[in-house]
Structures are given as structure tokens and as C-alpha cells.
Image (cartoon, rainbow, N blue to C red):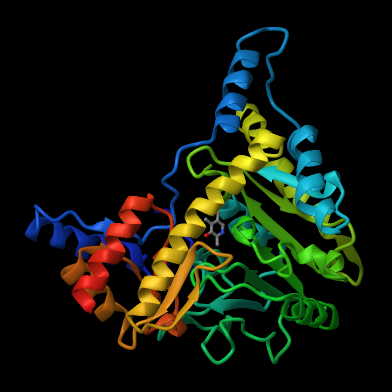
Length: 407
Ligand SMILES: *Cc1c(COP(=O)(O)O)cnc(C)c1O
């Protein structure tokens, strides 16, 4: 009989979301007249904007005519989209990125998950705690860890985000090869200043390490002094890769479009004394395993960079940010210390009790579903995450329910 990849056996069953689902469904069957409001999951609820829909329609019509039909597209994505990305997301922020350094894809989850396969199995990996689970689980699958114990995998270096460090952990105090960073952060909602990001870039330059920077929530930054891209920091173009997504920005979670920036100047050791451009490795990987995001989706994504699309994106992120403000001020009024919810769609709340106890209180007393922080790692214990991705009336009602039942 064929034997499975033993690394998969090390994976801890995805306890968090299945446990939430079980507790919610038991609440639902006991309270059929009191449907809970779900502020747990990180999915958007607002529909696509007019510009995106218009792009999809126009592309569908093109695909229907022989003269404008398109088959396989360029592996890196259509140039019209990569040029729009560079203009609006990088050049406008003073980051010198070339369209050839942009790789369009169908998701930042797959890109952040796939990228690790470019590196040796003995690569030393640092991840944040609490963490977006994709970074950890894909390294477990690749065999870079030992077994799971006390909420962590042996062999990974964890960078704890705590109230003491303002939820922005300092760079590791030991040499690592690969660092995953995510700002604005999921789950904590914390953002990093230019100074804090520069410390990471300097660390990576000194240690010969590579930073994988997940900026899926960059669009929610309103404070102009906070970098949206790691490439706003000098030196990052030699030691960092950045992931972006249209999912939370433009409501594309169901359409699927994202991109990854791999600067030409990043070089990694080739294992036999020389170096190899990281760009070559990622290009080879994508050309071998990926045939591009679909044309209609890339057309829709490009529309988001037009005048109308940009205004709509702004409006959409403003909408969720206003939800975040409502959540944060309600929770602060109840006396809970909060992080995030400003320049970020997530509010990270110190409940002063174990995460799952607070989860149960909010579910059973208020009928509101949140995410227990402990599910994202041991440093998340004692916290919950409330997501601003819901409709305004739902968020307002959820906060009313919480305020009445906990006051
Ligand atoms: C939602 C999210 C993404 C985006 O994933 P897609 O596959 O592009 O939908 C990436 N990173 C983080 C941290 C996220 O929360």
C-alpha cells in the first residue's frame, strides 16, 4: 500500500474552526429563535463594486468573440494589470518595483503557502505567535518541524506578539533564515511603524535572511506614516518578498486574485557555494505548476486601479473600518483593552480570561460569534478577535447585544 507523507501526520487537526463550528451549531439547536451574529470568520460580506462587475462583463464579451478570445495568458499575469499594480501600489509610495517583479496569482493563501518550497528542508523558520496558520502548516507539511507540543511545533522559532511589545515582536534574538511577517496583522490588527519594519529589514540584511511580508490588509491603512509595503524601507528590495491580495481589499474572496512581488535583487544561496536569483526560482516554480489567473478576473482586478475602482475600494475599506471603530469603541467602553480596528479590520481584545471562556460567554449570553485568540497560538491565549467584515446593521446589533449582556 502507498504510504502517506509522514509530515502530514504531524499536523494538528484544524481544531480552531471546527471547534467554533461545533459550539455554534450546538447553540443554534438550543436557540432556534436567536440566530447568532457571526463576527468570527475573515470573509467579506459586501458585494463586488460596479467597476469590478463591469470588468467581468466586458471580459466575458471579449471571450465570446473569436477576434478577442484569449486562451492561456502570460504566466506572470497580464502586463496591463502588473503595470497598474506598480503605479498605484508601489511607485506612488516611492517603492521602485518593476512590473516584471510582479507575479499575479489566484490567491495570497496559495502564494504564502507555496513560497516555502523554494527553500532547503533545513531552513530555519520564524513565525509570529499568534499566527495566520498557513505559514506554519505549510512548513510542517514540508518537513521543517518536529512534532506539536504545547501549542507549538518543535523546530520553528516563534515571535510572540504581546501587550508588552505592542503586538509587534522585535526581530529574533538568534539567527533564522526565513521570517514571516504580516502587517496590518491577522489576527491582532496591529500595524508596524517604518522604524519597526526597518529593524526587520536590517536584521534580515545582517543575517542573510529572507522576509516573507504578507500585506493582505495594506488597503486598510489610513495613517500615512505607516508603510503599506515593505519595499518602502531601504534595503528591503534585497531581502524581502511581498504578498498582496484583492480579497479583503476589493471583495474578491470568491473571484480569486492576488499578486506576489519578488525583486530581481534578492539572491539566495544555491547550496554549492554560489547564489541564485530568487526571482528565477519563483518564475520556474510558477511556470511549472501554475497557468495563471483567469483573464476576466485580471480584467476586473485592473478595473480597481481606475479612477472609479480606486474610489470604490476606498469606500469599501472605509465601510469595514467604520465597523471596526464601532466594535473597538463598544469593547473599550466595557473596559476591555483593544488593539487593531484602526488601520485594520480586526480588533484584538484582551478578555482578562481564557479565550474559550470569553468565546462561550459571548456566544451564550450575547449570541455573537467571535474567534478565540488561543486558536492562533499560545500568545493568543486570553484574547479574542472580532472581525469587522460584516454588514453595518449586524455589527451594530452585535455590539448592542454584547454591551447589554456584559454590562
Ligand atoms: C485573507 C488573507 C489572505 C488572502 O488570501 P487570499 O487567498 O488572497 O484570499 C492572505 N493573508 C492573510 C493573513 C489573510 O488574512
